[in-house]
Length: 374
Image (cartoon, rainbow, N blue to C red):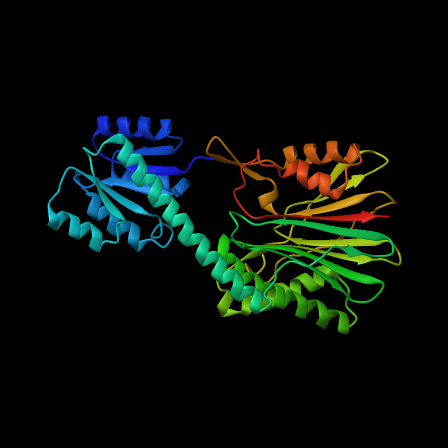
């Protein structure tokens, strides 16, 4: 997938020439003829690099850079000035605004492309080093928001698939909470946001979920709807998690009776594949995002299952993908793929390999849990 570069220049000819040059070099350029138009593009797309002219009417390149630095969403995007000025005062002013470099508009095309490639490689290497350093710390602290292995019960097999976004930990979290030989809770959640911020808050949500389940079970309460409401009340009252919300799918497996009970908080539907009918059916929840209101209006439903049937829990990253630079969400396409693979009696490994392949460009971390009646 080509790297996205936002070009900002009020001169149409310069924009067209740069656009053509970058496209031929395998990049995905986006054009804006003003600062205001640049921000409209940024609302929908986050580029890997911004290249901006300095002299523009109304808001110039320096104004643009200041606005970028003031916005937490964009301040870490590498920024490059493209200018016809060689004045040291101009250059210093741009560098003081933490621009990576200046490039003269008269620079040979080969040198321009080399500079852009070198900048992107350096930025990627720095990010990878930071990620590796954080992973080392997380491993030392034993911080994990997904299980180490799948789960085998007497009447059920529970498998899971989790794929991070661009090698960054994200907001998806999974847990298998085995109460005893009879009852096991399956947890799948997604903290809103991406990468490290969402990952950080996922541990707070997991902690509350685990505690609420244990306390309710200790009191003899196995209602997934009531447990969900208890979790929601605690999160809603926590100032630390103010304006931090999460989806949650909560399933209780009764391994003795072969019964599955489900409650959801603004999650995607649970999917059930009936092996006899060879069809996938959706089970939707009506509960609100965790922490959004004190009362989340959670309900529960029993999902009937027979030997050979499979249930699937998934986060939105499983149905989101990018096509021609545009983010798309299509649960029906996902169900169609899943159904075809299940009809062919594919294993869980074959299912995840078939659906989450390299042809579908990932836009978020994604998780999938399979609960199979055996």
